Image (cartoon, rainbow, N blue to C red; front, side, top):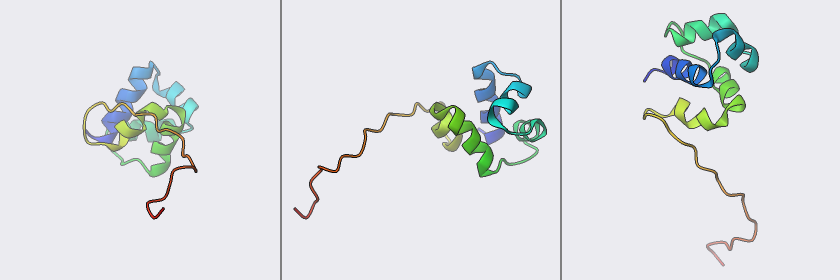
Length: 85
């Protein structure tokens, strides 16, 4: 699925029009329209802006597969023994 279509699906699943989505992400509306319509490839900043607002969609934006549910990663623990120990 093209990245622009993914951006549109995310926006629509959140129930936002382009104006509200642009306001919440800081992505200019013209840029959003061009991305959704496949007229331009989004720069990393656009994907980062979406992922910061809605982290649950970060993997979906980057993967070629269908809907991806992001798993929670446990916090790093310093007390894990090294392989050399």
